[in-house]
Image (cartoon, rainbow, N blue to C red):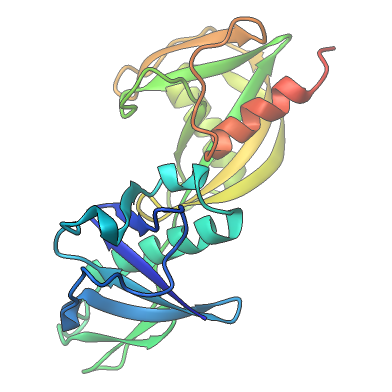
Length: 252
């Protein structure tokens, strides 16, 4: 069975029923450059397509923000949609070889090879940590300057060259809040294709320090109890999973 992963300006095309289409809608005329590559997923051929402009007719389907598609697609289809988006980003940023300048061509589902020096290239991931910090009956939540709405999230940041995940967590917490933590534990991970991240979640306990936010990164931060929470992150995020896990855990 073929699936059509059709993207345009950060959105993905879904059928009126909210599914990934099995064929290109009649109202969409593809040019050779629109067809990026084909991947295989659970026995299906999945064609990744980049449109130059959104379809003019609503009969073609509904262009849906990728994050919003989490609420519509099955978990399997959402994972497929995000993988396609990451490969689209990879394609856009690997047109030519960084060593010799020759064009790059797809060689496998997830890699390219230089037509000149034959260097192979795979999509790069940007690993980042996110941590839920507990202090008694409260957790630390922050509003980052990058947030586009009023929701609060958790302390997070990218892993730097030369440090491991645990060192990154402690550094980010200290830089953004001035706090030290203890009892650091792995929670889970999540692909985060905005554009090519891998979020690694942790939990920790507050150890010491006064809360002083890094104003270059955060607008505000505070300790919140179960009965006094700010607007929470989207359900598609590991940040929300971390908060929901804490809410589901009986208070001590």
